[in-house]
Image (cartoon, rainbow, N blue to C red):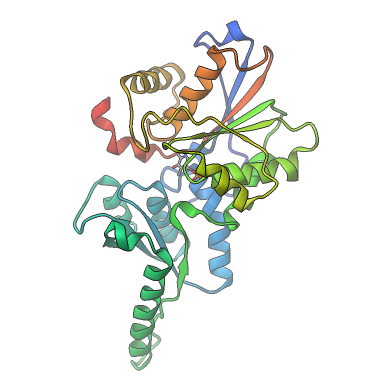
Length: 312
Ligand SMILES: *Cc1c(COP(=O)(O)O)cnc(C)c1O
């Protein structure tokens, strides 16, 4: 069961030659929130679930690729908080992997759609609403108290303005001030939420916010961030995608291995590996003033390892 009385802990990292640069490096351990409603996925879902409850919806409908941490987080959250779940998976019928198997175990109904159909998520949702509507009408003619399915739309990756409030709370939990805050970016929702949190909770001496896009052409993330939160003030580091989403290099793999063994904190090559690689690379290239205090958000997502285990 998920606890709601955080703050999540902070772990300081030493070694790796960091003392040479007089840098303090702390990690905000959102990976410890829950193994499968992982890190930022819980932060983003929290108020969406509350909204769904308020609207008396009982079926969460969402979208993702075959390795989507968000699909699994939604499946698990549905099981924990008493929602049915439907997940539209971008891919061929019958594609399976350990992550999708866990989605099924948590009771999620998986519906496979091709790339073309996947593009229009609202249409997929509307079609499902119509289909469930027919079913509901049919059931309402039956005796007893049939459970009508009332669907609630959650965009891919939890992309939504409701997600910002949950992510903003990360800033409210920080016990100290930092000069720099870093997070990994897929859609930029987490980054936008942190930007909101800085304005809401950090006060005028707030540090600088940084995002590390994990996919190529990550400049679109700046547009996403601004469309979610127009006041957002942050810098994107666009050169740490290693060729694209879920792409890796031997250098990245070596870094992930060294980091895990050297800190006892697991990271994976899809999101947090690229994030920490970027931070260490910036430290070594003299990007930060000596004495800087850096906080890195560990956004969880360890199930990403399941798709990459052959690398290790
Ligand atoms: C999904 C995910 C992200 C991306 O978050 P956005 O809010 O979409 O930018 C970052 N880290 C991990 C571990 C994730 O699973």
